[in-house]
Amino acid sequence: MRVDMNRSRRRLGAALLVAAAAVAACGGGEQEEIFDADRVIAFGDETSLIVDLRGDANGNKYSVNATVSETDPTLDCKENPLWIQVIADHYDLVFPQCNPTPGAVVAPQSRIRATVGARAADLTTQIDTQLADSSFRDGDLATVLVGAHDILAQYAQFPGVGESQLIDNVEAAGAEVARQVNRLASADVRVLMSTVPDVSYSPFAIAERAAHTDTDRQQLIRRLVLRFNASLRATVNNDGRRIGLVLGDEMVQTVARFPGFNNINNSTTAVCDLTRSQLVPPSILDCSRLTLIANGNGLTYLWADDRRLAAGAQLLLGNLGTQRAQTNPF
Image 1 (cartoon, rainbow, N blue to C red):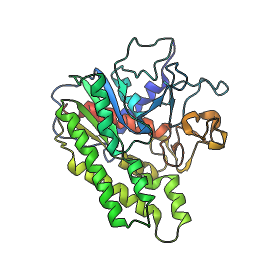
Image 2 (spheres, one colour):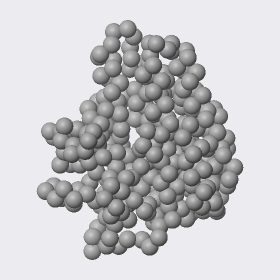
Image 3 (spheres, rainbow, N blue to C red):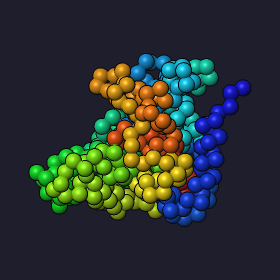
Image 4 (cartoon, one colour):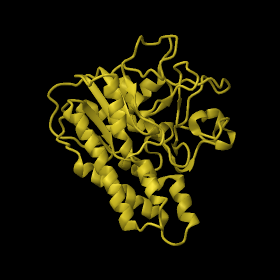
């Protein structure tokens, strides 16, 4: 019988994270009844996306994909799980894009509506797509993580557009995400909403700081992240009953400030070597332990490429989300 080592690591990680209250998300009240999800529906950008490139229900991720072995390049989508998979696994649920044989679940009901490059404005369409396929029902748990592309798109306009306008724009985007989360909650859906991971600590932001002398570009990105997330949190109706908040931004900040936290010891370098990608254009969709930088490890590096989370960070975020789902008074 095969032992699911990732599941063991996830449960151990969830237990260890109880002590990491500074990183854990907030929520209100005391849980009266344990919520048991029947479906997990994932909204947002590629942080929550599995792409079934080969049509074999063994999809690729925008992170560090697992392989069968150190010499066998065959991907294993059940390993190196995305944060949404960690949460779904807690409820013994799977997504159709990662449901390979043998042992495939018959007609899995969970869904991924997240899309690559999605921004705040795309959430409406994603929710509408889900409603066109299946109405929301009791037992639905939605995950929402989107906004990094809004922040980076606004940053790309600097200095042609001034910082004050950029801040106004990211605040509007954060508020729009919150409105769509409120929409889900109003439909009696339980929601795990993550703040945007702090991409000001990413290799991209570090490189931008080095490449420009007009201002500290890394600090500018940090301010945009801060204002997006502040607007998100100020607008969402977080009474602790329908919405559980996961602090993705504080997770990244803690890992970056305390090397070795949750065994992640590199927070500045992209672990995927895109020059070894077989895709056109090169992409981390085919990044695996066979295509990493020298001495790289997907579980001990924070970033997969210059702005997306590697496997260890995805696991940590998923543990935080699971912890919030367990303790939130849904």
